[in-house]
Length: 102
View 1 (cartoon, rainbow, N blue to C red):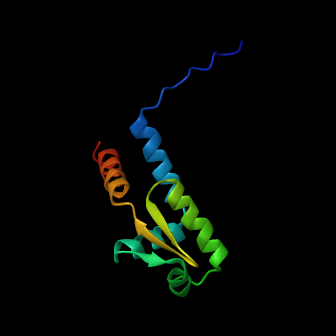
View 2: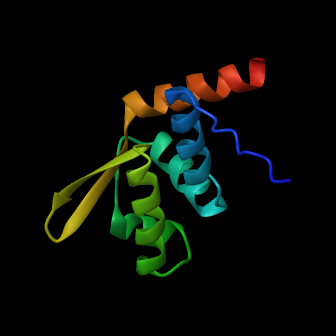
């Protein structure tokens, strides 16, 4: 006999928390967030000086953080300036705090 699969309806907070967790699932991304949290903003070129990886690799990590909404970028040709998205950063901190306080 096959069991019917039960569909789970996840809350918006659960979905958001999972998105943040996925974005934080690599140590380089955590490091980037720490760097951005310690200063107001940073240019892509500055990050390549601080993190010994290829610019293309750093860009991939920035893209993942940006897609999760944890950072935001402002194009200032030929560079991109990245900053924490303070609103989403606060949401992430609150969601993780709620998770660990349960």
